[in-house]
Length: 270
Image 1 (tube, rainbow, N blue to C red):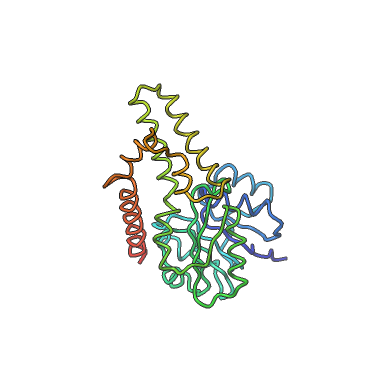
Image 2 (cartoon, rainbow, N blue to C red):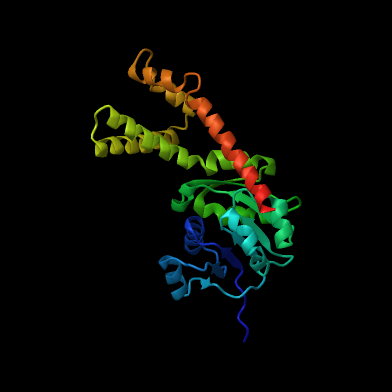
């Protein structure tokens, strides 16, 4: 008796891919999940050994195909990925810089979702934004939203022209916060704090500030003003950070560079 092919295929099981599978396995869906990963982690291998997923099956059309490889790898795996696509397959990409038209051309399907998650998605605390090919049914958009939900909040569809800016802001954004923590700790050391204490203070300050922002519902400007007493120590620091050429301008320049690189990746994908 022939075995039915999996209805959900994931290509690429790195941090984001594994987080997706983890969420799918916890959910109520009864989809038969397959993972294509030449170097599976112990976690992925254990799922396969327990019969929770199918690891590296031969190509067969699936209801949904999720692409979670690096954008530079897409050209190399596109032909293999096409083996999982039929006219009825919904293809969902979480690759930076690869446009819907490029995905459609290489996968030979018009049913495409392009999404951009961020690394907090690996613990279910991320935000994912997606754009959709013209003409997709509401059911396809709902399916994509449900598939991406294990990574955290899902927003979309948005116009694809926004995706480079989305990538620069939320896709790359966690790195900016990590750099801020790193820089704050180094600045604390320069003021005489022991390294371990400076790192702890920087980390917990950013964690606590993020939690406060999430809990309060106030916008960042309101929260900043609430902690800034005129003539106080915080104001003295912000006079430097917000001076000409300070943090606001640096972040605008940084996001512009990240968005430009996303657009360059689109050209390279051709």
